[in-house]
Length: 114
Image (cartoon, rainbow, N blue to C red):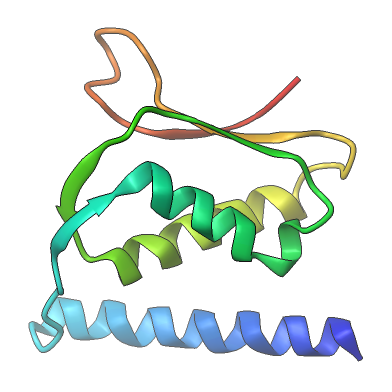
C-alpha cells in the first residue's frame, strides 16, 4: 500500500512537471524567481524525500545564493535524486557536489559516493 502511494505521488509530480514545461514553452508560465540558497534547498529536498529515508546522501557545496524559482529547482533536484536512488544499489551512497576546476564553470553534478 505504501508503494502504491509513493508511485501515485511520483506520477502526479511527473504530470505536473510536464504541464509546467508545456506552459513554459507557450509562455503562459511565469517563473517566480527569488534569491535562494541552493545548498539549503538541496539539503531540504534530501531531508524531505521519503525515497531517500534509508540512503546516505552527502551534500558537499558552499552556500550559493542565486535568483531562481525555488519550486522548479526543488522539482528538478527531487527528480534527479529519485532517479539516482532508483538506479543504484542501496548500499551505494549518493552525493551532490559542486565540481571544482576550470572546465565546470560553476555547475553542479550528482554523483555516487564511494
